[in-house]
Length: 155
Image (cartoon, rainbow, N blue to C red; front, side, top):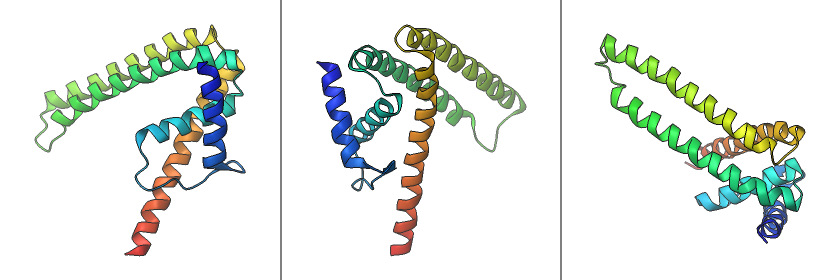
């Protein structure tokens, strides 16, 4: 059932937001849910997931994304507290040590989920996953830049 919904969502979002491989301009102030739906459709299409693969892959991927988000939020809050002009040498040392620890935690998480993904998908699709994530981020950044340019041009 979940796989069917994902595939239907993929087709509808794909038709709505993609033309010839390019993203069509979404409405202003795109809700987070729509961006997530676009990402699901984009990755599903790029990986050419079967219904069975999608059914088992998406819950694991969502768990992975949630854990990455937690790690990133914890790091950002630490860095924001420390990053000021009055940073002491000890604080700077602690900050760079924490950055290395953060990077290691993220690497450990990626390794953990790589093993989980290998139980669900062939390695070729996992490699495509990482590329699809980067491509989707590039598309979103391109949209942000274009919107800012349009807004600036309108002023």
